[in-house]
Image (cartoon, one colour):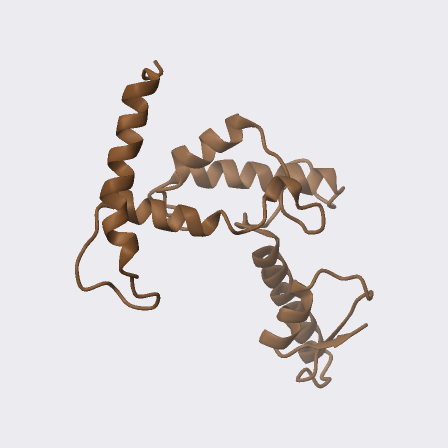
Length: 180
């Protein structure tokens, strides 16, 4: 249960006294410090800096999730130490991913036969998904052009002016002309 106010106040006070030693002298920003600091101090310093970021629940201008059910948070924390791409070590995670890919394929009416399964991958976020989709588009276009005996060295992609900014990054990183 909750600690009595005085005891809780003493614990917080003791932690602040311990942390204040490390806050007085600044830590290097781009190198490991010469001496270690307690894990509580490292946590507090990093957590305090992260508080300066925007609050995802208030961010309605991008593609982040503004709220998520607590059960999703629990599943993420239960899986966070798994190496997501090590499919032999984590076959259940791989199977769950494949089931989700198929559910999404059916939601978008992918042309699959009754016994066919969709091909796809799970990603950590929309930027990674865009990069993978863009590479698939580029490779498919290049293979088609090669088979037709046509040049395949100058791919382009046509987008609206309101396209997600990651498509610009994709075009730059993977040498695809972006046409708005």
